[in-house]
Length: 464
Ligand code: GLU
Image 1: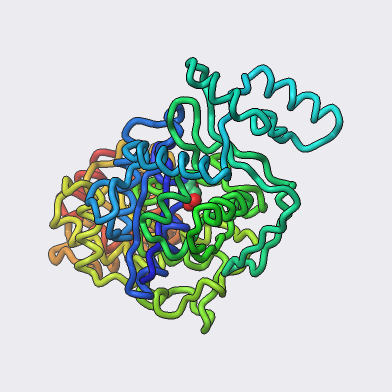
Image 2: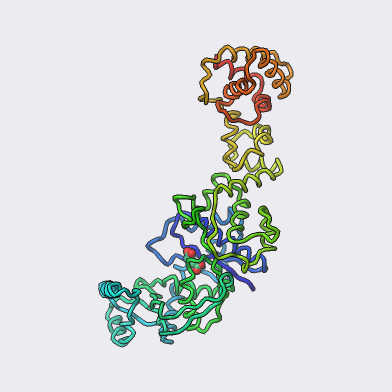
């Protein structure tokens, strides 16, 4: 049974777009194997908790359509899925590690640890705990009985090669001497990430740990823990971290990082996921646009490349435009209605949608292009004060149009350009700005048909 998970920490205002990528891969892998996709909330770092973060993360994942099978809000067989509600579980397993001598108590003070670190740095050594307390566990236990604050540390064995196979990166080897005796239980009774992640991945029967590359260096510590408990290793796959187009780590400065930002701008969830699927992976037929179902079918973890793919919002915008274009018109209208909170005039959306569907890259472009249908222009992008004569003639000819249809409007205006010997480009720019306030609008004649004769004449009159 394939069981995958993501384990977000509720320490930000939403799920990071990079974590949404990891979620997509986990979701797709579970789907592909008719397995389960789990969300576990890793809130062991109580100082960094952000209120509302957990709810927002789950909501955003749902809005993207990555349905999950077990989590804090829907429960499941292996709950609780919130680590802060599992403290007694971690305590039990920490005790087991101590019994097995795979972990030990440490009562070193902050000051001692700081001195140790400073001394090691001075000698250009990698800062590492020196196992000071390991050599005097009896004394340490006495101190703890008397109330001294303590942590539990991993007892990293000396001089051992730790080996594991990563589905994306192949065999990875590291010498244990490079590892620190990591704290597993903190003095506040909370586990650290390292203990909690291993215990939970085991208890929740996670078969594949698919997570970002930044956790790769933690994996050897986790392997020591799995071994100490006598548990079989899950399969590991570390997916690449998304980068800005200039290769720097995806950061707020260059790209919006919260996944819900893209939805708020009117990116379609399927387009964003399609784009994310292409991070570090390509379709066997080099297709750029494919459905999620197709992705699930053809993708394989081992085909993901490990080098950091560039997340390019310009490319994403292009792709989103392709998705918008392909929508059946009624779906497109529905999306526009929903996007604007069902507050806009539905008829007007229905009338205008076919004029703009091909021109839009995201749903928010709709108002940019169509605002003038809903509201009279408040300002004009070019100064029309010197054009009154021409505007007056436009008004005169248009008021004579009986059959108010785009063709008829167009013909009437063409005739007028010729009669007045004004260049068509200039003429229609003036008319466009008079109607829409802007130099860019959907096709003008069609727009004027939708606005209606009376409204068009009123808009011209206002300028006279
Ligand atoms: N809590 C970690 C995070 O925020 C989870 C890492 C993992 O998947 O093991 O990404």
